[in-house]
Structure formats: structure tokens, C-alpha cells
Image (cartoon, rainbow, N blue to C red; front, top):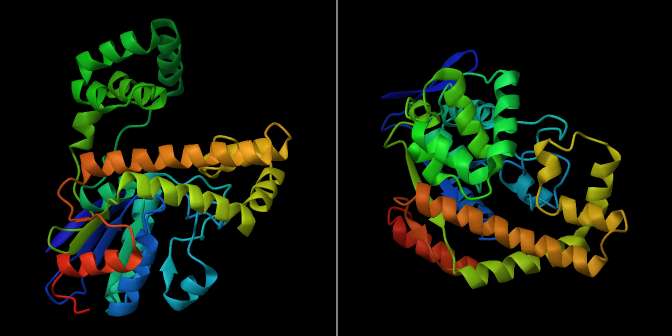
Length: 327
């Protein structure tokens, strides 16, 4: 059996057969414990780990993005974790092509793979594929921006709903970028973004992988988010952000939008006290975790759930979901 994943230079195929090692996909919001669970699974089955996190892929912010420790990376081989310079802005498509290649190479060596992260679009690229959406001309983008300013969000969304009702319904309030993007695609091609996204083939064929999504209690998750931010400050997060700021990178790059960068940058500029910067970063981290959880509930509703918070309890629940694995 084979599946095809679109790439910028053609098609990449990932083969699956009953002889191949199983591929495991582990998703979860920040601070949910997914990295520890993935490491435990990888140790047990002799797997290699492929990162599915849009920010942990960059080298610049090990502490701020909660990347695995150097010891963990040395203990179990990690791929697409801390491998890209922050000046290079990777897209979902760039990651998907790289991840497909890594998975193919690892399984080709007879090793299992654990793909772990919190970026839902990355997982969707593997399990549903990516649409080859036409590029948007600059004049169309400029017109969409002008229309949004003139019409306001409500009227702009109503216009989008006439062309792409599904996109207008699913895009969150205040998400100007995604609203504009959906309209730009339709204005450019005459085909809705939703229709384009339906014209996809998955990179991983059905039956070649198993999934699990971590969804711990919301209060416990938020408490862990707050504790993690405080620990990050002690571990050198402020120094990391200072080094990043010194590079004077384009503010539009993904690395510059990492949770905590804006708040700690404000502290470094003297605009926020350390206490206020920490509180603001903690709040933004909780919001980020909520967005990730919302995505999971909507886009990964059929994935088995690990709903506890303690690492040992998570492992036991994971084993219960996968009885083929012995404790």
C-alpha cells in the first residue's frame, strides 16, 4: 500500500506494509506531558523521535520552547528538533516534506518512529495531506487588506461566507490573517480554500500509524503552564530572548512569535517589570494551550485520549489504550 504527499518538486511516497515498524503520533497542548510520554514510548520500543512542533524545530530557543533536554536528545535520536536556524521561516509544507523524508529513512532502517508535538496542522499534513493552493498575487493581498480595513470583520466575514461558508464558520473571531487568507484564495482562483483543502492525499496511509492525543484536566494543565514559565525564567529564558533580540530578525518570522518572546522582550526593554512580564507570559501560554486543545477537539476527535496529568498515570493509560504493549 502506498500514499502520496505533495511536495514542491513532485510527489513523495511513503510505503506501508505489515512488515514495517509502527508509526506512532502523539499530540497534545503545551505542558501536557507529551514529550515525556513520547520519550518513554521511544525507549520501550527502540524508536526514534520526529518533532512536530512549529517552534521547537528552531535552534534559537531551547528553554523558551521547552525543547527536550540535551540528555534526552542524546538518549533517544531526535529529528526536526532544534535543527533549523530562526532566520529560516518554515511553513507547514516545508515541515511536511522534511518529516515525510525522515519517517521514510527511519522506517527504512527498520526502526519505529514516534512523531510528537503540539502543532495540529503538522499532524493533519501527515494524516490528511496538504493542498497545493495557488500562490496569491501581491495585489490580491493588498486589496484584501484594504477591504478588511474598510468593511470591518463582520462584513468581511459575511462576504467570505458567500464564497466559503465552511471557512467563515470555522475561523475564530478576531483572526484577521486567516479570514484574509481564505478570501485571497477565492479571489485568486475562484475556488474556495475549503475546496482546495479537500483535494489532498495523506502522507501516511491509513493503517500505518497509531494515534493518541493528551487532553488533561484544564486547571491542571494551566497550573503546569504557569509552573513551566516560572521554571523557564530560572533556566535562562530571559538570556535566550536577549540573544534572539540581538540578531535583529524580521519580526514576522515564526521564531519571533514564540510564546513568551514578546513579554520577555518587553521586560528587557524596561517596559514591563519581571513580575508583570512573567504573569503576561503565563497568561499567553494558557491561551496558547487552550487554542491547541480546541484544535484537538475539533480536528482530532477520533484520536484516543490520555486524560490524566501525572506522567506515570499517563503511561498507564497509554498502555491501556494500546494493549499490544506490555508494561
